[in-house]
Length: 232
Image (cartoon, rainbow, N blue to C red; front, side, top):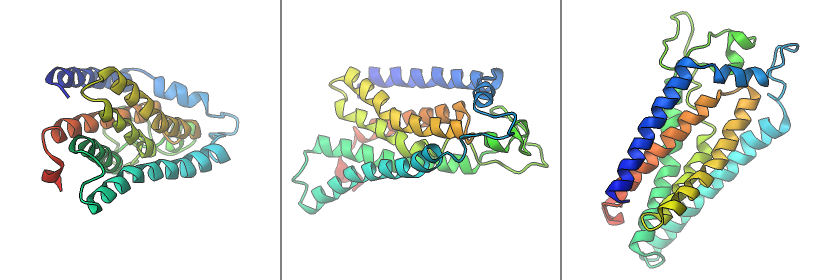
């Protein structure tokens, strides 16, 4: 990654973070979208236990994304067993970035989620639950326990796939951008499924995307300066 590309990425992350903070603090987009999938008459999210969203998208799709993540892991292990003869150093480094992304992105988001005060939509008073709605950066009332629902953890099972963009860097930044966007789609689909079920707000997923982009950028910058042997 060139210095210029890196600086553009940093600028994009800063601007997008500002946009997400504004949306979360000063708009009701999250609530309006959650309202749209909430059944007031039944006082519940009707798609919450739907087979496609609750089983396929929540379990099978997640398992498939994890299975895909094993491909670069097994590839690097096979390369190591065979004396580093399968890949050249550049390809090996890019595979390492993908493997590190597959581990660090879900781990980071899961850790942040575990410390979060925010509750999932279906636990909010607005939707028949017990917890108050909190905007981003707000503190939870002392009488309410932490909700552990921000950012979107389930989406991170697929968001790491966006790291395949590094295979086109630095030679083809446009193709890398396309690969990055396409690579986000599985995670976005998982996040959307959870939103329809009432398990997350839109901004929960968007912040997971932001964290994903940040981690991939950091890994790309670090590992393009170091050889794979230095990390092994």
